[in-house]
Image 1 (cartoon, rainbow, N blue to C red):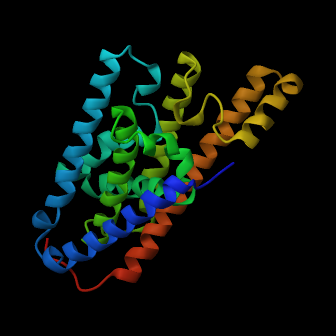
Image 2 (cartoon, rainbow, N blue to C red; image 1 turned 45 degrees about the vertical axis):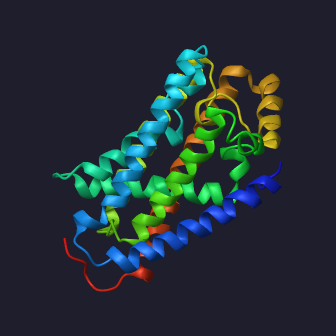
Length: 253
């Protein structure tokens, strides 16, 4: 089990450094502007995210559609939640921002801990020659940049700790849908059909002769779902911690 390949080290680390520098530059230039101005870079990236996802779906449709490309992955949530965060201004804005920021933090942290699980070294090597590989790398890196912008430009201000209920319930709902579709379509959405981490997959397979396929699969899905919820919970608190550290004077609305 390799967390980081040399390709990830050579590309992801420099990319994150560039994103952080860009975040600092934007903070210094528009960081004290009113909220609508600070949101512009985030909105542009959210639209770009949707466009490259449309490109992925179009590519798949024209090359024999792969069910794995259906939007039932954890990362598929960003196709919906980031544009909603970018443009929705209504009664539930704080809830939307809490959910979007929490799942952004979760994906960013996981990518920094275990990037080889998110996209492969092969995707990096084929970045300029294969659209699906380009999408895999670009999509997730854009999400990281979006998260950095949320923090750098203070696009989300955490409120009451009770806000944690929203991302947790949202993640539970996602897990229920993704896990169900994974079993029905026998497709590995969000690792709910089988595990991409080899040692854990070996454990799952070893339990099948003992517990039976159905019981093993139910147990596996429940454990996977619990880990998803736990990681989003920890990510919510990570955002609150960073926001508290970086908080300055109140910014204009």
